[in-house]
Image (cartoon, rainbow, N blue to C red; front, side):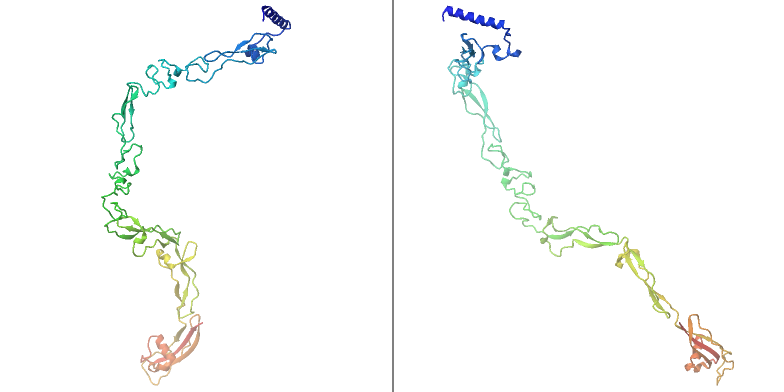
Length: 434
Protein backbone atom coordinates (compact mmCIF):
# COMPACT_ATOMS: atom_id res chain seq x y z
CA UNK A 1 0.00 0.00 0.00
CA UNK A 2 1.52 3.43 -0.98
CA UNK A 3 1.62 6.52 1.13
CA UNK A 4 -1.37 8.06 -0.72
CA UNK A 5 -3.51 5.02 0.07
CA UNK A 6 -2.51 5.14 3.73
CA UNK A 7 -3.42 8.78 3.89
CA UNK A 8 -6.77 8.07 2.36
CA UNK A 9 -7.43 5.24 4.89
CA UNK A 10 -6.55 7.49 7.79
CA UNK A 11 -8.96 10.10 6.53
CA UNK A 12 -11.68 7.51 6.24
CA UNK A 13 -11.01 6.29 9.76
CA UNK A 14 -11.08 9.86 11.10
CA UNK A 15 -14.30 10.53 9.24
CA UNK A 16 -15.91 7.43 10.74
CA UNK A 17 -14.87 8.50 14.21
CA UNK A 18 -16.23 11.97 13.66
CA UNK A 19 -19.51 10.57 12.45
CA UNK A 20 -19.72 8.36 15.54
CA UNK A 21 -19.12 11.34 17.78
CA UNK A 22 -21.64 13.39 15.80
CA UNK A 23 -24.13 10.63 16.32
CA UNK A 24 -23.64 10.92 20.13
CA UNK A 25 -22.05 7.45 20.39
CA UNK A 26 -20.93 6.82 24.01
CA UNK A 27 -17.19 6.38 24.50
CA UNK A 28 -15.92 2.80 25.02
CA UNK A 29 -16.23 1.50 28.61
CA UNK A 30 -14.13 -1.00 30.49
CA UNK A 31 -15.68 -4.42 31.05
CA UNK A 32 -15.41 -3.78 34.81
CA UNK A 33 -17.66 -0.77 34.35
CA UNK A 34 -20.44 -2.90 32.94
CA UNK A 35 -19.17 -2.92 29.34
CA UNK A 36 -18.22 -5.96 27.26
CA UNK A 37 -14.91 -7.59 26.36
CA UNK A 38 -14.67 -5.62 23.14
CA UNK A 39 -14.37 -2.38 25.17
CA UNK A 40 -11.00 -3.63 26.46
CA UNK A 41 -9.43 -3.98 23.03
CA UNK A 42 -9.45 -6.24 19.96
CA UNK A 43 -10.83 -9.70 20.67
CA UNK A 44 -12.35 -12.54 18.71
CA UNK A 45 -15.44 -11.29 16.87
CA UNK A 46 -15.16 -7.73 18.13
CA UNK A 47 -15.93 -4.97 15.52
CA UNK A 48 -13.15 -3.25 13.63
CA UNK A 49 -12.63 -1.21 10.43
CA UNK A 50 -11.49 -3.17 7.47
CA UNK A 51 -7.97 -2.21 6.56
CA UNK A 52 -6.84 -1.60 10.15
CA UNK A 53 -3.33 -3.00 10.72
CA UNK A 54 -2.98 -6.41 12.45
CA UNK A 55 -2.61 -6.34 16.24
CA UNK A 56 -0.45 -8.53 18.43
CA UNK A 57 -2.04 -11.14 20.69
CA UNK A 58 -0.91 -13.95 23.02
CA UNK A 59 2.32 -13.73 25.07
CA UNK A 60 6.02 -13.79 24.31
CA UNK A 61 7.11 -14.74 27.88
CA UNK A 62 9.41 -17.76 28.20
CA UNK A 63 9.12 -20.24 25.37
CA UNK A 64 5.87 -18.68 24.14
CA UNK A 65 5.74 -16.58 20.91
CA UNK A 66 3.22 -13.82 20.30
CA UNK A 67 0.56 -14.22 17.59
CA UNK A 68 -1.61 -11.66 15.71
CA UNK A 69 -5.18 -11.03 14.68
CA UNK A 70 -6.47 -9.12 11.65
CA UNK A 71 -9.61 -7.18 10.82
CA UNK A 72 -11.79 -8.96 8.29
CA UNK A 73 -15.34 -8.13 7.35
CA UNK A 74 -15.54 -5.61 10.14
CA UNK A 75 -14.53 -8.02 12.92
CA UNK A 76 -11.28 -9.09 14.47
CA UNK A 77 -10.18 -12.64 13.65
CA UNK A 78 -8.99 -15.24 16.15
CA UNK A 79 -5.44 -15.02 17.48
CA UNK A 80 -3.36 -16.95 14.94
CA UNK A 81 0.22 -18.13 14.77
CA UNK A 82 2.59 -17.95 17.72
CA UNK A 83 3.46 -20.56 20.33
CA UNK A 84 1.41 -21.00 23.52
CA UNK A 85 2.41 -22.36 27.00
CA UNK A 86 3.00 -26.12 27.50
CA UNK A 87 3.78 -28.36 30.44
CA UNK A 88 7.26 -27.91 31.85
CA UNK A 89 9.87 -30.23 30.33
CA UNK A 90 13.40 -30.82 31.66
CA UNK A 91 14.98 -28.41 29.16
CA UNK A 92 15.98 -25.35 31.14
CA UNK A 93 13.23 -23.25 29.56
CA UNK A 94 10.07 -21.55 30.83
CA UNK A 95 7.71 -23.88 28.95
CA UNK A 96 4.58 -22.83 30.85
CA UNK A 97 5.42 -19.17 30.19
CA UNK A 98 4.94 -18.08 33.80
CA UNK A 99 8.23 -16.15 33.79
CA UNK A 100 10.05 -18.69 35.98
CA UNK A 101 12.43 -21.49 34.97
CA UNK A 102 12.00 -24.34 37.56
CA UNK A 103 15.00 -24.73 39.89
CA UNK A 104 15.51 -28.40 38.98
CA UNK A 105 15.93 -27.41 35.30
CA UNK A 106 18.99 -25.27 36.04
CA UNK A 107 22.42 -26.66 35.10
CA UNK A 108 24.65 -24.71 37.47
CA UNK A 109 27.83 -26.69 36.78
CA UNK A 110 27.21 -26.60 32.98
CA UNK A 111 27.92 -30.31 32.63
CA UNK A 112 24.91 -30.73 30.35
CA UNK A 113 22.85 -32.45 33.08
CA UNK A 114 20.20 -30.93 35.22
CA UNK A 115 18.75 -32.07 38.51
CA UNK A 116 15.63 -33.16 36.67
CA UNK A 117 17.88 -35.30 34.44
CA UNK A 118 19.22 -37.07 37.51
CA UNK A 119 22.31 -34.95 38.17
CA UNK A 120 22.86 -35.70 41.83
CA UNK A 121 25.45 -32.92 42.33
CA UNK A 122 24.80 -29.84 40.19
CA UNK A 123 27.73 -28.04 41.74
CA UNK A 124 30.30 -30.56 40.44
CA UNK A 125 30.71 -30.87 36.65
CA UNK A 126 32.38 -34.23 37.22
CA UNK A 127 29.34 -35.66 38.92
CA UNK A 128 26.11 -36.06 37.06
CA UNK A 129 23.76 -38.96 36.30
CA UNK A 130 24.09 -42.23 38.32
CA UNK A 131 25.65 -40.95 41.53
CA UNK A 132 24.25 -42.36 44.77
CA UNK A 133 25.49 -39.84 47.29
CA UNK A 134 27.83 -36.99 48.06
CA UNK A 135 31.30 -37.65 49.31
CA UNK A 136 31.54 -37.69 53.08
CA UNK A 137 27.84 -38.35 53.69
CA UNK A 138 26.94 -41.09 56.17
CA UNK A 139 23.67 -42.77 56.96
CA UNK A 140 22.32 -45.68 58.98
CA UNK A 141 22.08 -49.01 57.28
CA UNK A 142 20.64 -52.40 58.08
CA UNK A 143 17.67 -53.09 60.38
CA UNK A 144 16.95 -52.21 64.00
CA UNK A 145 13.96 -54.55 64.21
CA UNK A 146 14.08 -57.39 66.76
CA UNK A 147 17.63 -58.43 67.67
CA UNK A 148 19.11 -56.70 64.60
CA UNK A 149 21.34 -53.63 65.09
CA UNK A 150 21.87 -50.94 62.47
CA UNK A 151 25.34 -50.05 61.17
CA UNK A 152 26.72 -47.04 59.24
CA UNK A 153 27.73 -46.54 55.59
CA UNK A 154 29.87 -43.72 54.21
CA UNK A 155 29.80 -42.08 50.74
CA UNK A 156 33.12 -42.22 48.89
CA UNK A 157 33.48 -41.04 45.26
CA UNK A 158 29.70 -40.59 45.12
CA UNK A 159 29.19 -44.25 45.99
CA UNK A 160 27.95 -45.66 49.28
CA UNK A 161 30.41 -47.92 51.03
CA UNK A 162 29.64 -51.17 52.86
CA UNK A 163 27.43 -51.24 55.96
CA UNK A 164 29.75 -51.32 58.96
CA UNK A 165 28.83 -52.46 62.50
CA UNK A 166 25.41 -53.90 61.66
CA UNK A 167 24.04 -57.10 63.24
CA UNK A 168 21.77 -58.90 60.82
CA UNK A 169 18.95 -61.43 61.19
CA UNK A 170 19.57 -65.03 62.23
CA UNK A 171 17.42 -68.14 62.36
CA UNK A 172 14.81 -68.13 65.10
CA UNK A 173 15.81 -69.86 68.36
CA UNK A 174 13.57 -70.65 71.34
CA UNK A 175 14.57 -67.50 73.25
CA UNK A 176 11.48 -65.31 73.11
CA UNK A 177 13.19 -62.83 70.76
CA UNK A 178 12.70 -61.73 67.16
CA UNK A 179 15.93 -63.31 65.89
CA UNK A 180 15.01 -63.09 62.19
CA UNK A 181 14.08 -59.41 62.62
CA UNK A 182 10.75 -59.69 60.83
CA UNK A 183 8.95 -57.75 63.55
CA UNK A 184 7.23 -60.82 64.99
CA UNK A 185 8.22 -62.99 67.96
CA UNK A 186 6.96 -66.48 67.12
CA UNK A 187 3.93 -67.46 69.20
CA UNK A 188 5.58 -70.64 70.39
CA UNK A 189 8.40 -68.62 71.96
CA UNK A 190 6.04 -66.89 74.39
CA UNK A 191 6.24 -67.49 78.14
CA UNK A 192 2.91 -66.06 79.18
CA UNK A 193 2.84 -67.77 82.59
CA UNK A 194 6.42 -66.68 83.41
CA UNK A 195 7.45 -70.17 84.49
CA UNK A 196 10.71 -69.92 82.56
CA UNK A 197 9.67 -72.43 79.92
CA UNK A 198 8.20 -71.69 76.52
CA UNK A 199 5.90 -73.60 74.24
CA UNK A 200 8.81 -74.28 71.92
CA UNK A 201 10.57 -75.85 74.93
CA UNK A 202 7.68 -78.23 75.56
CA UNK A 203 5.43 -76.17 77.89
CA UNK A 204 2.01 -77.70 77.17
CA UNK A 205 0.03 -74.96 78.99
CA UNK A 206 1.65 -71.54 78.84
CA UNK A 207 -1.17 -70.01 80.89
CA UNK A 208 -0.49 -72.15 83.98
CA UNK A 209 2.85 -71.69 85.72
CA UNK A 210 2.50 -75.06 87.49
CA UNK A 211 2.38 -76.90 84.15
CA UNK A 212 5.65 -77.46 82.31
CA UNK A 213 8.18 -80.22 81.67
CA UNK A 214 9.73 -81.35 84.95
CA UNK A 215 6.70 -80.47 87.10
CA UNK A 216 5.19 -83.11 89.43
CA UNK A 217 1.74 -84.45 88.63
CA UNK A 218 -0.91 -84.14 91.35
CA UNK A 219 -4.44 -85.48 91.44
CA UNK A 220 -6.23 -82.74 89.55
CA UNK A 221 -6.94 -84.02 86.07
CA UNK A 222 -4.05 -82.01 84.58
CA UNK A 223 -0.88 -83.22 82.87
CA UNK A 224 1.49 -81.01 84.90
CA UNK A 225 4.72 -82.53 83.56
CA UNK A 226 3.56 -82.39 79.92
CA UNK A 227 4.35 -86.06 79.28
CA UNK A 228 0.94 -86.71 77.76
CA UNK A 229 -0.41 -88.64 80.79
CA UNK A 230 -2.91 -86.99 83.14
CA UNK A 231 -2.31 -87.54 86.88
CA UNK A 232 0.65 -89.73 86.05
CA UNK A 233 1.51 -92.00 89.00
CA UNK A 234 -1.03 -90.33 91.31
CA UNK A 235 -3.89 -92.08 93.12
CA UNK A 236 -7.10 -90.06 93.15
CA UNK A 237 -10.25 -90.54 95.22
CA UNK A 238 -13.74 -89.43 94.26
CA UNK A 239 -16.50 -88.55 96.72
CA UNK A 240 -20.08 -87.36 96.48
CA UNK A 241 -20.44 -83.86 97.91
CA UNK A 242 -23.49 -81.72 98.58
CA UNK A 243 -24.39 -78.29 99.84
CA UNK A 244 -27.03 -77.84 102.53
CA UNK A 245 -30.63 -77.78 101.39
CA UNK A 246 -31.87 -74.29 100.87
CA UNK A 247 -34.55 -72.82 103.10
CA UNK A 248 -37.98 -74.32 102.61
CA UNK A 249 -39.79 -72.10 100.11
CA UNK A 250 -43.27 -73.28 101.15
CA UNK A 251 -45.92 -70.80 102.21
CA UNK A 252 -47.64 -70.86 105.61
CA UNK A 253 -48.79 -74.37 106.64
CA UNK A 254 -47.95 -75.99 103.33
CA UNK A 255 -45.49 -78.30 101.60
CA UNK A 256 -42.62 -77.15 99.40
CA UNK A 257 -39.55 -78.49 97.64
CA UNK A 258 -36.08 -77.53 98.81
CA UNK A 259 -33.00 -78.19 96.71
CA UNK A 260 -29.23 -78.44 97.04
CA UNK A 261 -26.22 -78.89 94.80
CA UNK A 262 -24.72 -82.33 94.29
CA UNK A 263 -21.39 -83.07 92.66
CA UNK A 264 -18.58 -85.57 92.41
CA UNK A 265 -15.38 -84.23 93.94
CA UNK A 266 -11.87 -85.43 93.33
CA UNK A 267 -9.41 -85.58 96.24
CA UNK A 268 -7.89 -82.25 95.15
CA UNK A 269 -11.26 -80.54 95.53
CA UNK A 270 -12.03 -80.29 91.82
CA UNK A 271 -15.51 -81.03 90.49
CA UNK A 272 -15.32 -83.93 88.06
CA UNK A 273 -17.63 -86.13 86.02
CA UNK A 274 -20.21 -87.84 88.21
CA UNK A 275 -19.45 -91.15 86.55
CA UNK A 276 -16.22 -91.23 88.58
CA UNK A 277 -18.08 -91.36 91.91
CA UNK A 278 -19.34 -94.71 93.20
CA UNK A 279 -22.50 -95.35 95.17
CA UNK A 280 -25.92 -93.77 95.04
CA UNK A 281 -26.04 -90.17 94.04
CA UNK A 282 -27.49 -88.02 96.88
CA UNK A 283 -30.88 -86.51 96.18
CA UNK A 284 -30.90 -82.99 94.84
CA UNK A 285 -34.31 -82.18 96.28
CA UNK A 286 -36.66 -83.15 99.08
CA UNK A 287 -40.10 -82.24 100.30
CA UNK A 288 -40.26 -79.75 103.13
CA UNK A 289 -42.97 -78.49 105.44
CA UNK A 290 -43.66 -75.06 106.83
CA UNK A 291 -45.83 -75.60 109.93
CA UNK A 292 -46.20 -71.91 110.69
CA UNK A 293 -49.90 -71.11 110.44
CA UNK A 294 -51.12 -74.67 111.16
CA UNK A 295 -53.68 -75.06 113.99
CA UNK A 296 -56.01 -77.61 115.53
CA UNK A 297 -59.73 -77.48 114.81
CA UNK A 298 -62.39 -79.04 117.10
CA UNK A 299 -66.01 -79.25 115.96
CA UNK A 300 -69.25 -79.68 117.91
CA UNK A 301 -69.88 -82.76 120.03
CA UNK A 302 -72.10 -85.40 118.46
CA UNK A 303 -74.97 -87.33 120.09
CA UNK A 304 -74.16 -89.85 122.84
CA UNK A 305 -73.94 -93.43 121.61
CA UNK A 306 -76.10 -94.74 124.54
CA UNK A 307 -78.91 -93.23 126.60
CA UNK A 308 -77.66 -94.77 129.85
CA UNK A 309 -75.07 -97.15 131.35
CA UNK A 310 -72.34 -94.97 129.70
CA UNK A 311 -71.90 -94.05 126.06
CA UNK A 312 -69.50 -92.05 123.92
CA UNK A 313 -69.83 -88.67 122.21
CA UNK A 314 -67.38 -87.72 119.45
CA UNK A 315 -66.49 -84.57 117.52
CA UNK A 316 -64.31 -83.84 114.48
CA UNK A 317 -60.76 -82.84 115.39
CA UNK A 318 -58.11 -82.17 112.76
CA UNK A 319 -55.14 -79.99 111.83
CA UNK A 320 -55.93 -77.23 109.37
CA UNK A 321 -54.14 -74.51 107.40
CA UNK A 322 -54.89 -70.80 107.39
CA UNK A 323 -57.66 -71.28 104.83
CA UNK A 324 -59.38 -73.91 106.99
CA UNK A 325 -58.47 -76.87 104.79
CA UNK A 326 -57.60 -80.11 106.57
CA UNK A 327 -53.92 -81.10 106.51
CA UNK A 328 -52.07 -84.08 108.04
CA UNK A 329 -52.19 -84.13 111.85
CA UNK A 330 -48.39 -84.29 112.01
CA UNK A 331 -48.25 -80.70 110.67
CA UNK A 332 -49.68 -79.49 114.01
CA UNK A 333 -47.02 -81.24 116.09
CA UNK A 334 -45.48 -77.88 116.91
CA UNK A 335 -48.65 -76.38 118.38
CA UNK A 336 -49.30 -78.98 121.11
CA UNK A 337 -51.44 -82.08 121.27
CA UNK A 338 -54.85 -82.25 119.61
CA UNK A 339 -58.07 -81.53 121.56
CA UNK A 340 -60.07 -84.57 122.71
CA UNK A 341 -62.15 -86.04 119.95
CA UNK A 342 -64.36 -88.25 122.23
CA UNK A 343 -65.79 -88.22 125.77
CA UNK A 344 -67.98 -90.36 127.97
CA UNK A 345 -71.63 -89.49 128.27
CA UNK A 346 -74.86 -90.75 129.96
CA UNK A 347 -72.88 -92.67 132.57
CA UNK A 348 -75.87 -93.20 134.85
CA UNK A 349 -77.33 -96.75 135.17
CA UNK A 350 -80.14 -97.87 132.99
CA UNK A 351 -81.68 -99.86 135.94
CA UNK A 352 -81.65 -98.84 139.60
CA UNK A 353 -83.24 -100.48 142.65
CA UNK A 354 -84.91 -98.62 145.50
CA UNK A 355 -86.21 -100.02 148.81
CA UNK A 356 -88.24 -99.08 151.85
CA UNK A 357 -88.32 -100.69 155.34
CA UNK A 358 -87.89 -102.69 157.39
CA UNK A 359 -91.28 -102.26 159.03
CA UNK A 360 -89.93 -103.57 162.41
CA UNK A 361 -86.49 -103.79 163.91
CA UNK A 362 -84.30 -106.59 162.83
CA UNK A 363 -83.08 -109.08 165.33
CA UNK A 364 -81.79 -112.64 165.76
CA UNK A 365 -82.96 -115.30 163.44
CA UNK A 366 -86.32 -116.54 164.34
CA UNK A 367 -87.93 -119.46 162.87
CA UNK A 368 -90.44 -119.63 161.43
CA UNK A 369 -90.19 -116.06 160.11
CA UNK A 370 -93.11 -113.74 160.22
CA UNK A 371 -93.69 -110.13 159.49
CA UNK A 372 -95.24 -108.81 162.61
CA UNK A 373 -94.90 -105.21 161.45
CA UNK A 374 -96.39 -105.57 157.95
CA UNK A 375 -94.88 -104.06 154.74
CA UNK A 376 -94.05 -100.46 153.94
CA UNK A 377 -95.20 -98.63 150.81
CA UNK A 378 -93.13 -99.05 147.62
CA UNK A 379 -90.69 -96.17 147.18
CA UNK A 380 -90.88 -93.83 144.15
CA UNK A 381 -88.40 -94.23 141.21
CA UNK A 382 -85.90 -91.43 140.51
CA UNK A 383 -86.81 -88.85 137.89
CA UNK A 384 -86.68 -90.28 134.38
CA UNK A 385 -87.12 -93.85 135.62
CA UNK A 386 -90.23 -96.00 135.64
CA UNK A 387 -90.90 -99.07 137.90
CA UNK A 388 -90.45 -102.32 136.09
CA UNK A 389 -90.57 -104.71 139.16
CA UNK A 390 -92.01 -104.29 142.67
CA UNK A 391 -91.86 -106.93 145.54
CA UNK A 392 -92.06 -107.21 149.32
CA UNK A 393 -90.03 -109.54 151.52
CA UNK A 394 -89.64 -110.72 155.12
CA UNK A 395 -87.36 -113.45 156.42
CA UNK A 396 -83.91 -114.76 157.21
CA UNK A 397 -81.16 -113.57 154.87
CA UNK A 398 -79.58 -117.00 155.02
CA UNK A 399 -82.50 -118.15 153.03
CA UNK A 400 -82.70 -115.25 150.61
CA UNK A 401 -81.04 -116.95 147.74
CA UNK A 402 -84.24 -117.13 145.79
CA UNK A 403 -85.87 -114.03 147.26
CA UNK A 404 -85.05 -111.12 144.98
CA UNK A 405 -86.61 -108.44 147.13
CA UNK A 406 -84.95 -109.65 150.35
CA UNK A 407 -81.54 -110.04 148.76
CA UNK A 408 -81.77 -106.69 146.93
CA UNK A 409 -82.72 -104.89 150.14
CA UNK A 410 -79.80 -106.36 152.06
CA UNK A 411 -77.39 -105.32 149.25
CA UNK A 412 -78.79 -101.79 149.07
CA UNK A 413 -78.34 -101.43 152.83
CA UNK A 414 -74.94 -103.02 153.12
CA UNK A 415 -75.76 -106.30 154.79
CA UNK A 416 -75.17 -108.97 152.30
CA UNK A 417 -77.23 -112.15 151.85
CA UNK A 418 -75.16 -114.13 154.37
CA UNK A 419 -75.94 -111.84 157.27
CA UNK A 420 -77.75 -113.87 159.99
CA UNK A 421 -80.17 -111.14 160.73
CA UNK A 422 -83.86 -111.56 160.53
CA UNK A 423 -85.48 -109.00 158.27
CA UNK A 424 -88.89 -107.58 159.15
CA UNK A 425 -91.11 -106.39 156.20
CA UNK A 426 -89.47 -104.53 153.29
CA UNK A 427 -90.64 -103.20 149.93
CA UNK A 428 -88.25 -103.23 146.92
CA UNK A 429 -88.77 -101.73 143.47
CA UNK A 430 -86.72 -102.01 140.24
CA UNK A 431 -86.68 -98.79 138.16
CA UNK A 432 -85.67 -98.61 134.46
CA UNK A 433 -84.54 -95.40 132.67
CA UNK A 434 -86.99 -94.32 130.06
